[in-house]
Image 1 (tube, one colour):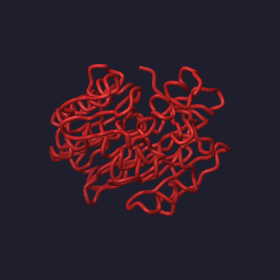
Image 2 (cartoon, one colour):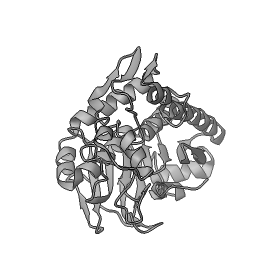
Image 3 (spheres, rainbow, N blue to C red):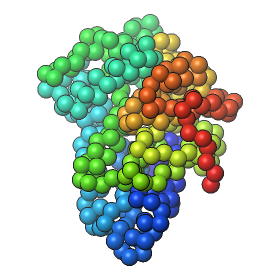
Length: 329
């Protein structure tokens, strides 16, 4: 399966960095066979999902990963608007869906929260404009009037779109929600030292005495190169960028749209956010691409346990005050 450019937010921890109960203890347990670092790679959501667990048994860890992957697969089917039989596919096709899964209701409500938080910069109803950009169709005023997350009605009994032609994409938040769901399965099974990554979105958990995971952030213009390397522990990381799915060779038109203008934002090449959950990091990284560095950092600085790094089109990097320092190696 071909990988998107987003897959190059690499997890260097999977290549040998330690995590969990401490380096010396981990090495001792590995030598005696009492503890294992289990890594697996699977295809899902059109990308590659990497798992890493510190576990007393490789067999037990593999079973736990399978259950986690099954949950992630179930969630991804709920959020997949490309499948006409999915709840989101039915909503886009018919303007309404009845008895929606609670996970869809929760993610949509979270998306509306980020819409309010960003004063409309994050808007899941941009799909009609994105479709027009992909197909190189002109953006009419009628199309722009279909973009307004406030016109989405959500209850436990039904979800509806109030204007014909409206449609939703959850590409800016769903992957994070899927990863969060998979991590919760592993954590509920008793695993404390976990790393799950899918297409550049990451959750890394560690026990209280655990060593941090090392993560490389992709360079927006140089394939297989990191523009920054950081350490994280009990945090999520997500990156959005103009390079991940672009419609023009110069990256001026791509899969992220400013819902207020109907055009792709012009300042940033990428935005990386560290947050408590992957869904939060996912939504906020998209939001920063739209808001740009000044307004984006103003938002990030007011959110607890949240930090960001942005890369401008001329490859200059800027960080919020709480972003971790770069590490060597």
